[in-house]
Image (cartoon, rainbow over all chains, first blue to last red; front, side):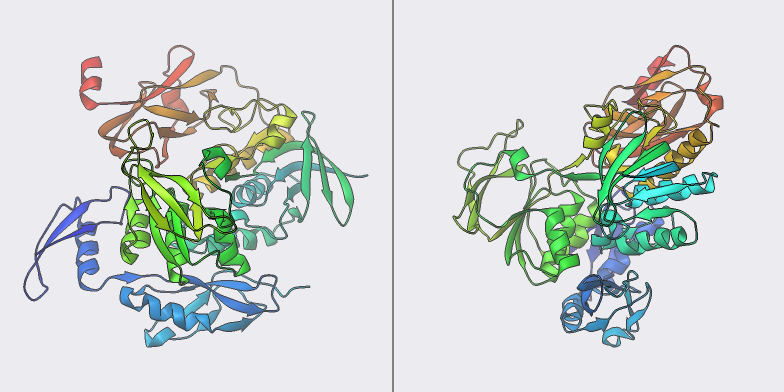
Amino acid sequence: MLKHITCTVCPLSCEITLEIGENNEILSLTGNKCARGKVYATKEHTAPERTLTTTVRIMGGVHPLLPVRTDQPIPKPKLREAMLATADLVVQAPVKMGDVIVENFLGLGVNLIASRDLDRAQ
Amino acid sequence: MRELLVDVAVIGGGPAGLAAALAAYKAGAGEVLIIERNHELGGILQQCIHHGFGLHRFKAELTGPEYAQRFINELQETEIRVLLETMVLEVTKERDIYAVNSREGMLKIKAKAIVLAMGCRERTRGALRIPGKRPAGIFSAGTAQRYINIDGYIPGRKAVILGSGDIGLIMARRLTLEGAKVEAVVEVLPYAAGLARNVVQCLEDFDIPLYLQSTVIEIHGDERLEAVTIAQVDETWKPIQGTEQRIECDTLLLSVGLIPENELSSGAGVELDPITNGPKVDDTLMTSIPGVFACGNVLHVHDLVDNVSKEAERAGGFAAHYALGQLSTPVKRVKVEAGENIRYVVPHMISLDKPVEFFLRVQRPQEDVLLDVGGLRQVKKPSVRPSEMLNITLTPEVLRKLEGDTLRVRIVSPEEVGADA
């Protein structure tokens, strides 16, 4: 089976073609113009990851929402579960950039952290 | 009316204004003032909660708020003054700024140098002349982004996005993550306008269809949007009969371009470039009015904030030099011209006595070409696209070799250069 992956490492956006075997193993990999493309396409095939950025509710702040992110990428199939988990979160102002909002988020070994300082409303 | 006297006044506290003010301060300007109409600094970055900012500058993938916070934190260590919730009403060519806020009323700020850093705004439905009714549910993509990321409102449940620029793509993902259904992204060009990375991570990841060479030709619904009709277009962007397709939706987002916000500039008499819609500047980022500088999206629309910061630092530094009387008048001035497959080049005038970083965009995509700056320097480009701004720096040593009083920037094929030589 052939699989096409657009490399997102740099603006060249190489179209990489992977030949996939019966046990989901990569038989060949072509179309990448550099070594980083091979690493990316391999990872994208075997265990794609994405950084989640979203918002959580914040009480008493200058805004009703606090932007947050995972401090490491998480498995792509976990994005939806992660969004549902952030839906019920409520934090209290003030918050500083980098503050850990949830430690070991979803047991994935990553933290959900604040993306900015958010002061208390006057 | 209260009067303030400052060395450098920066209008706008977004990424350009922050970097310009910090650079002016570091270059020795005594009184540096930022005037910002919002209640906080950071500009549009505060609503761009996705990551991917700062790869060049910080070698990290930051979110918009994180990128802004780094500058705000640095600013807090300085004596730069910030006037928030303050609207500039007028700038004069004598460098007087009239502003207003609800605490002090009218203010007159006399500045030795001014940095224009007002950014840009979104093109609207009116500018596109989409026929049909005018129901609720049609938003510019940035407005929807603000509702979702700052205010906490979802603009609708079923959306179509017109325009595949980065903001449109980012919003497709954001709406999907927040539980809305994005039925389609519609793009008039034969290729996605945004970065490939965003096509992959914002559309393909969520199986959102991208309709190329297509546009929205009709809007349906009375009170609230009910559907749009999309159709394929020919080379002249005219809809092709028989390709119409109705898509039910309650929300239409428009991500169809940004326009530098230059009402203050033109009010002051700053000469504008009809292509960039921003001021014409020289290699110190000074506009046609002495002592008035411009940087960031008010000058020309950038695609990377890293480039905005870099450009703004130069503008802020030169503004400080001007305010301190250290900016000498150039001996020779050379006009920069956009040649073959170049849409625009900034700066518009250069003096050959200092290094210049040229920012430019091409008119159409091309592959395996050379970027040629006045025959002085050529750089190989595997691919050029209108959506990706190019930059190239030339040193004074190289620039001084220029003959004549025009520097022509162009895209050429490698064979062509061979033939020239």
